[in-house]
Each structure stands twice: as C-alpha cells, then as structure tokens.
Length: 202
Ligand SMILES: Nc1ncnc2c1ncn2[C@@H]1O[C@H](COP(=O)(O)OP(=O)(O)O)[C@@H](O)[C@H]1O
Ligand SMILES: [Mg+2]
Picture 1 (cartoon, rainbow, N blue to C red):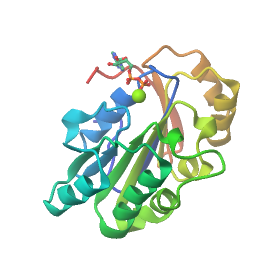
Picture 2 (picture 1 turned 90 degrees about the horizontal axis):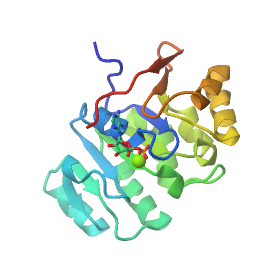
Picture 3 (picture 1 turned 90 degrees about the vertical axis):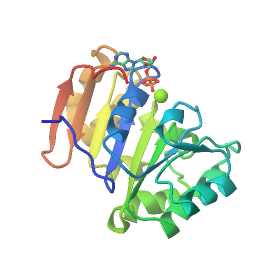
Picture 4 (picture 1 turned 180 degrees about the vertical axis):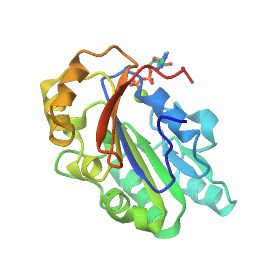
C-alpha cells in the first residue's frame, strides 16, 4: 500500500528547508495524477508536461486539450500568477494546480484573489492545490488550514517550527532533528502524524 494516495481535488502543503527534498517529493505525488498544471518558476518540472511561458500559450495549450501543463512564466509577477489562477478557477475542473515556491506569491496576510478562491472553494469545483515552500511561516494561513495533507522536511527556524506547531502540535519540534530527505506527514483523515524515511530520488 502507498503511504499516501492523493486525489486531483485535494489540497496538499509541502514545507522544509531549501534542499531538504520538497520538490523531489512533489514529483513523486504528481506522478499519481492525470490532470494538473504546475506553476514552475525555477524550471524544474520540464519533463512533466507541455511547457508554456505566457498566459497566451497557456490558453492555447488548454484549447488543444492538454491536461498536463507546466507553466514556466517569463513574467514572475503576482499579477500574472493571479491571472493564471483566474483561468483555472473560472474555466477548469478535475485538475490540480501545483505551485512550487508559493511564498513568492503570498505572505502571512495576503494572498492573490484567485489563488485564495482555488484554495478555499476549489475542492467543490473539482480543483485541487499543492503548495510547496521552504518558509511556512511566510505562507498564508488559508493554505495550511485548508490542507488535507501537510508534509514537512527538515526545519531549523523557530518561526517555521512554531507555525507548524499551530497545526501539528508539539511533534513539530522533532523536525529540527531529522536528516535531509526524511519527513513528517499529517493527514486530516486519520489525524495522525507519522515520520518517514526518504523516498527514492525521482
Ligand atoms: N529522497 C531523496 N534521495 C536522494 N536525493 C534526493 C532525495 N530528495 C531530494 N534529493 C536530491 O537533493 C537535492 C535537493 O532536493 P529538492 O527536492 O530539489 O529539495 P527542495 O525542493 O527542498 O529544495 C536534489 O538534487 C535532489 O535530487
Ligand atoms: Mg524545491
């Protein structure tokens, strides 16, 4: 049995220090999905679908029926990101939006309008969300609060550990002591926190 089996309309948040294994784990999860859009500012997911760089190219790829699309935006602004989220929210269903480095687009207290729409009401429209960020303390609370799964790799900053403690309790303290590529997973389905050994490198 798989340790985690995700569905297209669920919400997942992955955190942990830079280089701790987040993107590799995200790739492992994405392989379970058929329909997704990856917002990939660091250009690490090129092999996961058709690669587009602008809103116009994104719209064309949708029109052509692609369901595995990697957006490597030329325009890194929050406005461009929000416009992509708007298209997904208003036009699509049965799809997951995956955003690596999601802290580039939100703060503790602000979140693009249509990202918030996807995170808070997307599930009932068949839209899922996977957010990945090294600084969970800097990510909007709606993202953590709405997640069915929270996954954390090694953490070392008190701010980040304290943020995770709000959602996971004192077990989050142990994140200071785990090795790179080891991780913790919490799911709202069994409300249990478990620690895991590294998965294979993708
Ligand atoms: N489970 C693993 N086993 C072996 N190498 C890994 C594993 N996870 C990640 N790596 C490698 O470590 C480096 C950092 O991983 P990455 O997933 O990009 O980290 P992050 O996204 O947290 O910065 C990459 O070179 C990656 O291939
Ligand atoms: Mg990464």
